[in-house]
Image (cartoon, rainbow, N blue to C red; front, side, top):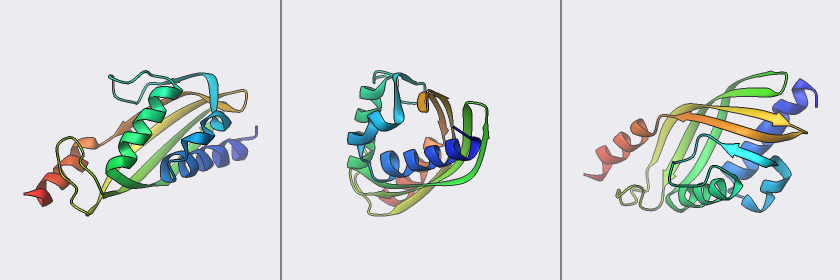
Length: 137
């Protein structure tokens, strides 16, 4: 895969899997040995855990992840993101507010055989919760 193809692949993954929540297509994007270092510790760090995490997220939010910047080199891609999250269901004890809140973060992907084999994430979840709590009281 060329650098541009890798960038496009990551962009498609973000759109299909995270924005649309279409986990039926995970096999298209994830290597069989996929490890996710960015999901909560109570979930298995594999495709099944990711599927559960996406389902939990989508039951509480209608997410929109926007790639603000992307650096891709060799088999790694780092993206800087903004997440707009419409709060539609209870999230960590906070009842749905109907509001759209925003947070920022970074995701890093390592590819192998044209699929994602590893993922790391650093998302400012505290800012998201602070914004929700400010509106829920």
